[in-house]
Length: 488
Ligand SMILES: Cc1cc2nc3c(=O)[nH]c(=O)nc-3n(C[C@H](O)[C@H](O)[C@H](O)COP(=O)(O)OP(=O)(O)OC[C@H]3O[C@@H](n4cnc5c(N)ncnc54)[C@H](O)[C@@H]3O)c2cc1C
Image (tube, rainbow, N blue to C red):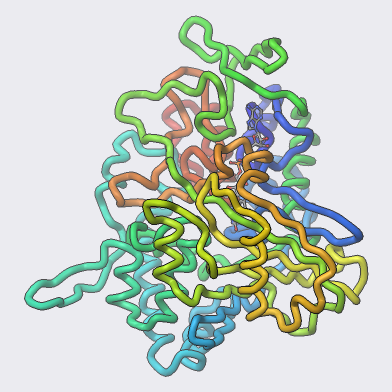
């Protein structure tokens, strides 16, 4: 196993249960990859993901790998409201967790009658896209005829009459403009793409599954921080006798008689193995996995994140939303900066403000730990000025923020590259249908027999649930063979 990210660890635990002897070789001194924690002066912060979508993937992992269910190993809490949205015009909308009727009512109240209904109708169509793609894009190995997924748009867009022509939304931005028809609903929709580093003007309409996923399965937090989930997966691996070698950088996959036969380590030694599972970004190894003809090309140009960790004096006020999304005042300028020819960070980006109600993250009730995140181009040279920009935007959501600030700490794309190995700190997006296959990820099996790919850079793509599913798919392909068609 190459790398101790959550995708590879999910595969490791499942394979160990199936009777394999599993050894993980991890370049850094700890497990979890992107899922890290920063601690100082009694404050604690997640420096990777701060929320967990679709916990069912990890519930399944824990059921299949031992007696103790996930809920006995970590405390999962639903985040309600799922998010409070602060729009550019000053409108504010707290959206309840996983309740269609509740969200419709909240949007009608905040944005005016009719807005909730339009969003609710959109969610019904998004559900159709989800139903059509859930199995091939989450639960099954990538179809050999993946071109079908690349060509077919599963989102049932509403015909839109324009001059004499009838058109259908092909991108997320077109869904916003033609079906939602309110700049705040557009911002709400597009923020889901942006959070995964996708340009809503380019993202296919099938990206509608991203808000649907959050709406249908809820937004969850792991008490103590999301790093606790990585800890639980690591401990489950240890309980199943998976061996971990930290400080062990893999430089290449050893090939013998046309099969993967082990890994080559940076210190020149070789660890032999019957099978190799690679859980790192493409291009990380000196000798990466060979690709078969006609295979999906590894995703390029994925965006990164800038994260600012704030230690504040004064307790978290009662009733504070766990997550607030502060939308950019100039949306087009933000998208142009991020995804234009000369990519750069927007000066006033959309910022996600996380304020968990969690005593484990503060020295006492008289202090608060807040995390700010914005999407930035991968490889961008973010500096103190950009961190200041995020704090300035967050002041719209957190009154007296600067007066309360004790210190702050910044995590840049370079820091993400350090903990994951991915060039420029790129964070892979989940696999999506249509868009000529640009948002699909390479299959979990490779052209080299015995070599498999897990984690966010392989099918079904990035994000905690998707990476967890890649582990299940790899284990299925190894245990049941190439005819494995996904878990039922
Ligand atoms: C700031 C940030 C915010 C995020 N927010 C969200 C979110 O809100 N929701 C969500 O679902 N997901 C989010 N993600 C993405 C999510 O964290 C990842 O998709 C997920 O953790 C997948 O991890 P992985 O299995 O691909 O491994 P990675 O996390 O990429 O880890 C790879 C591991 O391999 C190791 N490695 C690399 N090279 C080598 C080598 N040569 N030899 C040995 N080991 C090596 C690395 O050290 C690392 O431990 C976020 C990520 C970041 C960074």
